Length: 200
Image 1 (tube, rainbow, N blue to C red):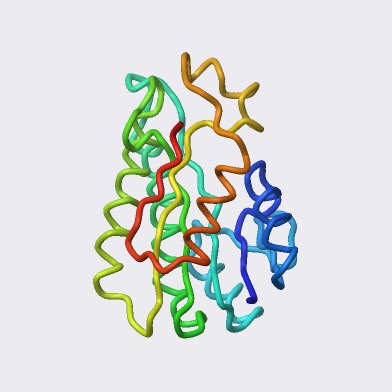
Image 2: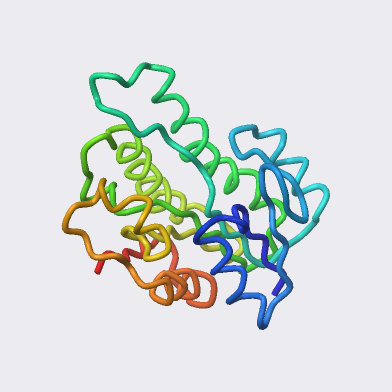
């Protein structure tokens, strides 16, 4: 398969790339480096990326940001960061990417445990994750040509434990092999409209 991985240079992305590279042709897209550059918050940038790389068999997105801050400090613009990047960025990847996806291909989006089990300072991020979940379940009812859309929703991963542990008191870090399996299930399985939760 020819697989496009957006965010393939990040903490989780590198691990996912390493796994799929063993048996597939991988294209890495990133905001500042990669085989092709893309800013998912800009739909014209997404279109330009796909025009450069052409048709693919699978799209994996492990990109998108949202503002983490106390609820009392979040401004309207802070919310729009997450809405424009992690939510609409991933929605637009499906909306535009389906035109560059081979029949029976898959699109895998990424969210996180905050949709179901938020912690403090994540009002915006939790909201966006939950919205992506609803989008995936709904778009799966209408996407055509045998295409599938799923989301992988992980807890705090082992490789990011030191950075985020203070935000997630008492949470168990998720082993990276479990996270990889979530993406493998989405790409290689037959599920459609699934939220693949990896929380324990």
